[in-house]
Length: 408
Image (cartoon, rainbow, N blue to C red; front, side):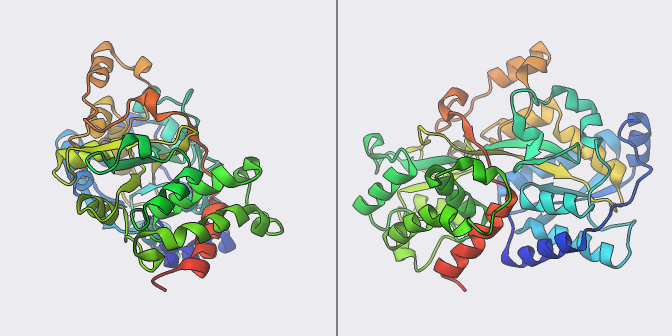
């Protein structure tokens, strides 16, 4: 979730090419990590825009206090780049120890920039966590690559994501739902003003742009590499030709946009929009359970696949409470914490664990978990489209703002 100001921060980091510092804390010596972490306070910088996620983090903090004597402070962000900016500023000031950020909920361009600039805790810590043994890195390649960038143990997978659309079946028939970006445009022509997306650089809004780009670009393999400036205009032309047609058909004719996903969700609940989308397959069920959406809301995906990725936890190179951060990252990867997180009544975030690697008891708990009334089964979600290289996210956001930015 990177804002416009964050782009300048990340660009500065890439220019500086900073080098990280070594740390004595070693995730491979877990007994020492547990002893060192006791009494530490972990400043966990994570998005704070959803009350159910905030409640989950509070629960995890309580568990950390009782189990390890670690206090967890949730630093609520509306933009991950703000935490990144703090680390950049500390590095520039020579503060290579005692940093203000201990753990960051991160992925995509923020991870790519921090890795390039050497601002992350030593490689391989994630694969040394005791609970790494449960991670499904064999069939879920996105736990090892973040927007095409190898993670190299610099971040720990926390949850899965898949772009899923929602509609209110009391107003919209299943037979009328779009099945691709192209059919969504036709649907919008027949239903003007009933669809929109959050204004980029909101992460959810940009994800919609990437979905359309992946579907329409002539050669998808180009998206797995950094942007080629010489061919960008031609590569992105199908996306912007599509948006030129879609924009006047959007809610308020594209003269205003939902602020973010919660705003878009409220507009579905209020009857202002008929189709919305999120990156969490259980989001609709969770919102129904929390009274935010009516019980008639249901989920659907495009049959030709939708965007998917993994989100992660990273530790800055100069974190004060590295041991406490390791303990928290490991706990959040545990079967207990992952099961609770996947419960649609609590969060509904898909697990990164392999059920085959779990004990019979834990596996049964996952298999018997009620995914929620509006959640598609795993085999109904279809395969995931690969995230483009982070360059594409930055480039198409900037071009979108130049062409369509409603709030500039």
